[in-house]
Image 1 (cartoon, one colour):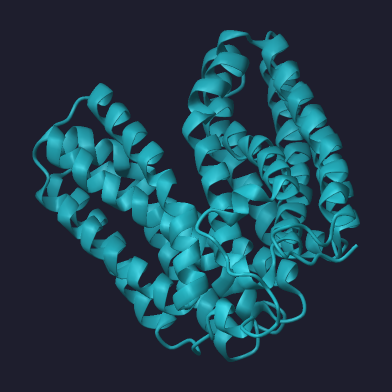
Image 2 (cartoon, rainbow, N blue to C red):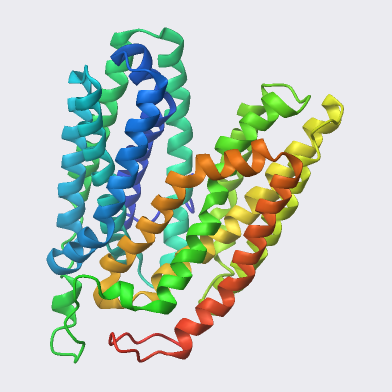
Length: 413
């Protein structure tokens, strides 16, 4: 029954299990985090928003330095320590009773989250074998499924709406990090990439070497812009359905289910056509067009009868999710293909920093374009995605035209 659904027994299945467990915990916590802080801890909505915003911005600083540590010390060991730090920080949240302590602890969790993303990149690359994009796509499908399961469990906590239930939710997330760390400890040791490259003529990697790689920085910047699409369905769409359309409110949850099912079912399949830098660039370009079409369909729901608004929104979500599949596969391929083997961690850290910055800005950007500006804003943001997608093949080719840069990077042309 599980043939084709699970990797073969071994390290890749172990990492998939660790991903599933940690994603359940994240889905459980993130779905009800705001309610926990306001209804259980006693903070105001403004305090929660300010504290989490500050923590997210501070957390971005961990990406590149921790990625460099993973290159020097090994990704498995680095990632395991980070999971333990996240477990402790999450457990400490149950003791928070003041705004100052909330900001301190939530900042530690954000630093650990950003650091974990940086270390997970080289860890995944080292275990993925000959098809890293396909395996990374599989892990994303696993994470989406687990996150949805966690969200359903969080719904039970929200219905109970007691301090005991909220504390159990937080401790369950802490436990998920501990279990993830235990599973990661079972993975084989990976020789630090800098040791693998010793004696090969690769120059020593400086602390901020990735920032000197201008083609990769350009690819990361475009990828960060495109990553804003991930917040369209979870932030802008619910507000649009409830406040600007005649569609029923249950459609908010229905759209989330549609998106999750499509990603789980088709993310790996979408990665099969992305096999090199050129195909990744084309995939990014297609995704931008899909985002525009999907967002246009959602925008047209404003002022339409309930049945038509519902149909337009569902069509828009499906088209947008197809673009999401193409974008994700392209992003994975470019991040693995363009990053040098001896610096996977540092390059992964820059990518995590870029997408993290986009996530921090997403509420403001989407609120301005999609809610404040209305229909023209949806179309304008879709146009931004088209431009970023169309620019990606050129940025990728720029990275490959200069395979021998001053950084010692060798890339396939």
